[in-house]
Image (cartoon, rainbow over the protein chains, first blue to last red):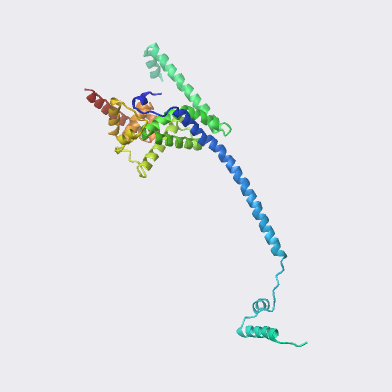
Length: 109
Length: 211
């Protein structure tokens, strides 16, 4: 190697080249290995998370399916859907009057 | 070929043995590079190959960068970045040039990138002088020069970045003109004329200061 560098006045810290070499190898080769380990660890974590989320979703949906949804077909909105009727003011007034009247009416035994 | 053999015949025996020794070394070097590339391009032996590559070129790359950057600490950062790039990009090396030329080109580009970020510009102006040359040199604790060296640096500081890089690569790193051309992307004739012009200027100034 050309020895002119010494004449240029440039110096380096003691054992610099050995330390620098080690540093380069640790940031490239070892980092590459660590990166692989890190990637496989990430994949495992993702897998566990996916299983967890799937099980939660499954449990939620299965409980939703077992719940009975009771819909009264007599309510104006539902009945209009079922019977294909238009909601008119008249219809709603009639429905509400019936409902209130039934609730308020005292029927002696 | 005939001209070359005639030329060899005219040389004294000691010169021919030196030349054949050099040719032998060159062949040996090419074989070494081929073997190294085989190691580097195989995923099973890449790490081993890279260790050898760092062993071979690391020190020379450092000095090449140092002469451009001047400060030791910054050179160390650029050197690390250079080898990370080499490690990541070795699979893409097309073998159109020597492995060492490819390595020095990456180092050169990294240094230019560093100089641009240091002066907060997108692109370094290669044909302008570095006004901070002396300041950077004296600010570095790993710089210790005598009078003649200081004079030498003073002359170097008056050169443009392009002139200085070409001179350093040829004079200090002992690279061939073709290699310098591949590393810097500058036309070979421009490189030759720049080098001889700078060499003449340095010789003249050193002689004048010695008087």
